[in-house]
Image (cartoon, rainbow, N blue to C red; front, top):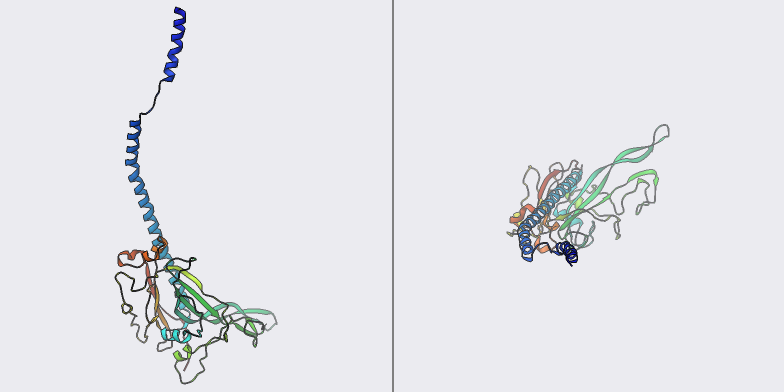
Length: 334
């Protein structure tokens, strides 16, 4: 019996040790969870704040860069301008009916101008030895910039700027005669459909009247070229939606240099996201323009259009830029 008792006692001791429970009590777990909550919650809030701030700053930086890039592009375009239409000129070539430039749904033409553009290797000819060669040339083109605000899901809830252009061709007796809409002449470089050079042969009227009477050669047809979006996230806020509200009279055009009379385009400013002040001609028949842009960084962060309108208290989200440009060319006319 003593041996049996000893065996049982030696076998039960390890078993009792193995069955002994170890770990945290429920109270200890609750205390640990509360401490973790108190530590992690502020850290999580801090991280969310850092991410939100980073997103906001990135949106501002993107808007500033895009506004600057768009303004640089427009500036280079205008530097080649030979004539810029003011608001009266745009109304003359783009009336409510029979517009000479494309009618863009929910779009307003802001800058419309003629420019003289360099074209490389456009003229085909032969030298004195009869060897074919190509020469550079210049062509005229008509350019239009639009401010568009609609509800398209393809673009942002803000506004956008679109650019349209048609170009002249290069006449060449040994060229092609199948250019769309141009069959009476041969071209080495076809004109765009609808293009028609401006006519300065009219006597007794001003240069503005001559340019404002320009018509295309479509005869009821449509252009092949369509406006292409240059930049999105332009401020769409109307002036009566701004805080504080402003009026169109708050827009003032420059009065210098002397000899230039600037007029705002459009004549009645609805949105200050994109507008211009234009002097169509000076004493030397040169054109000049001052262009104003305002972006909308908030539209990158918030999808509700009613919550991304301009307010002075949130002006850092609406980067602005402007530039004054004088056309590098001018038109000889009497």
